[in-house]
Picture 1: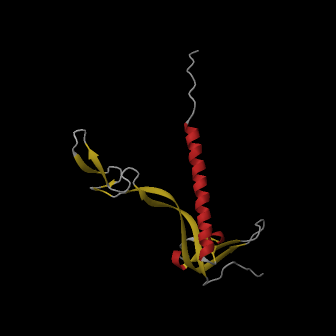
Picture 2: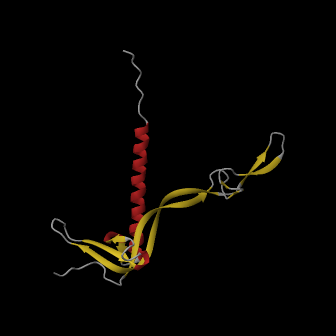
Picture 3: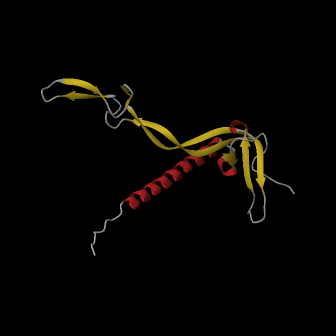
Length: 156
């Protein structure tokens, strides 16, 4: 029996995935200025730190946000795993790479590994879009589930 896999031991590959990551964006209140210029009704002018983007004792001009970002890495195949069994169409391939641990690290499914950086980046961007859309659908469902109609109380 000959088993053919997409990658072999020692091959250099690119991984691509969409990851939920912390991001920073400009503060919507101070627009990145870190402070507000205030004028009192009496005409007195002063500056005050922006409370929205305040971290500890100072304002940063940015706020934390979360979203999906493409993540790509250059990896070297250190182990190839193939599963062939009755009822399985084709074969299931998994790979372990030196950079993420061989033997006790991450098992990469073949769908996340690519020959070129461009292929990995394209896949990762598509994954981010797919995951963002899925998250939006889940959040919309939660909003709808939270809006249950109240029925008038009937005292029979």
